Length: 273
Image (cartoon, rainbow, N blue to C red; front, side):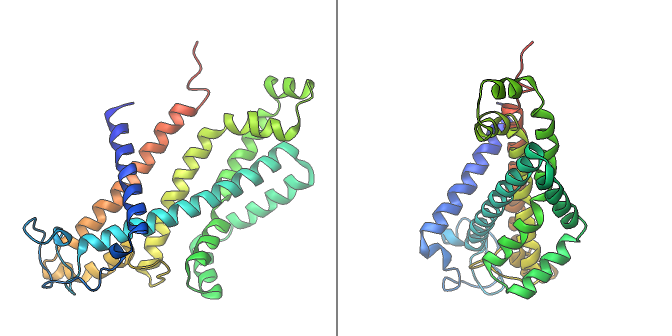
């Protein structure tokens, strides 16, 4: 593994550790009651929670960023997992079994693809309420289409290959063929789409929070950015800067890590000779 790959996986492990720690330690979620003088710049001579400075209300920028990491990682994982599971199920069923199921699933994802995603997402949030699980369900419902379409085409191609035909000829069941042969050979696509769904979910959470749809506990990067926007005119650069760095580090590390996993698990790239 390259140095860049090691750095990315270390960063991802760090983000995961931060998210798990903030989730388990309830005191870290309390960022409102620990305050100092407003707009204090970053300094290692300050108390540890204020090494990254304070915001316009004297609250710790570091604590707000840690809470934002926890919210984004948790939200992104749940949405990405839901999208991947739906995409695998519908894509494999459509591509492997064909017939009426293929016609219905093709019609369904074609219809969803024709709907403007952000408008549908906002409409669902307005209709069913501004809460965490509504946002998760809306994003999963709208975003499983890409993996489904990809897997449908790949499964249709793979099921005609010799190894699948050989498994059928010796009486291997269809479910076993799907789970033991098809899905492992398509795992590199799944890794890539998991990363893309994760990135999409984090971006959606930031945008929705920026627009006023706050459905996660505490703060998010969208709220930090919204609050810091006006503070830039006063020369207060650190809330926006540190939020952008941590947000970009997560998204970039995830994308590079997914590419490395694809290279590792793609059977075609690991074939010798």
